[in-house]
Length: 408
Image (tube, rainbow, N blue to C red; front, side, top):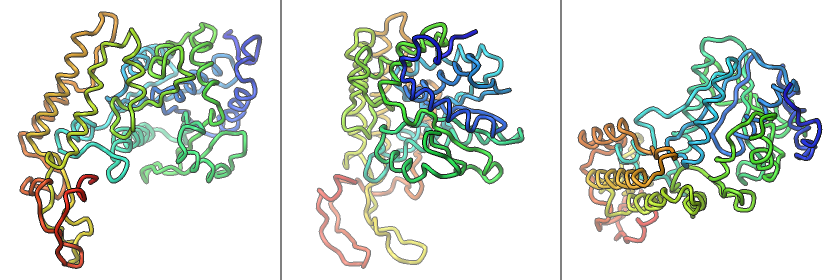
């Protein structure tokens, strides 16, 4: 019989936090026909997944007929996170009651393909934050819909959402904490999700570690989860992405490698400073590549405002748009060179870096060769650094200043 967190010395792991998690799970576990876990590979969702499996093994929760684990593979994860996920998935698949599905965006929607193949500029926090929904949220939603298409009943989707990770997220939690019958201490439970019409109302989400502090997450991942009696999970390698032995103190927020949305890539800098991961240092050159794709000289711009369906002029006017074809091709070669430099220096025991595979490279080259542009662009537009008169929505004309374009 597997040891329980509620016996012996294991009670040192935030007793109240663990008891609230179990209370949360028990409150909704039997109200749904199926149970699934949305797993990003990060610290919070990994703690949630491994904790739930331990509670099932320990007899604290009934084993479901089928536990679905949906792993969101963005193709841009930090190597320690990707490596830890591969090890975990291999172990999860040994259990015949667990189904693991790796969820990826369709080829043309993947980060590198969409940016370098179609020419959409890298995401930014001001006007064009397209990445999270496209490479993570939408593919996850589609995977859940496919899984539910041929099975009856409802699904309890468990997530690793935790308060304190995001001010915006905390605001959403605060506004909906009593929604759908949820009570304080029972996690964040929601029955309304943006699913396809055919399965709408069949999926509810629960965040059972909503109340955990970051130190509780790391106590579980670094001390308990690796022990055989708690599952023997390979979670210590995950800590490397957050600062290794100093993970609690560093607590680097992780996302995609060289995330264009982050003011500073703390996670990547933390990883490459560790002896085991110094071979990844060339990845620090990715951010300058991404920044170059947003420069006005490397993009096109509408020479005249678009005419809307009602006959009026677009308020966005002569906005800056997609990345030029030759610039995309140059950026592709730079990304491939960075990946090759890393892998050439890779220790034999380390996993290969794979942020741009052969199929993705081929598709990018195919799209560039076909002169592919985003919707409503055809490549005939002027260079974004060209000096033009600005035509306002009311039809008046005024000289345009270059500085007005820099933040586009």
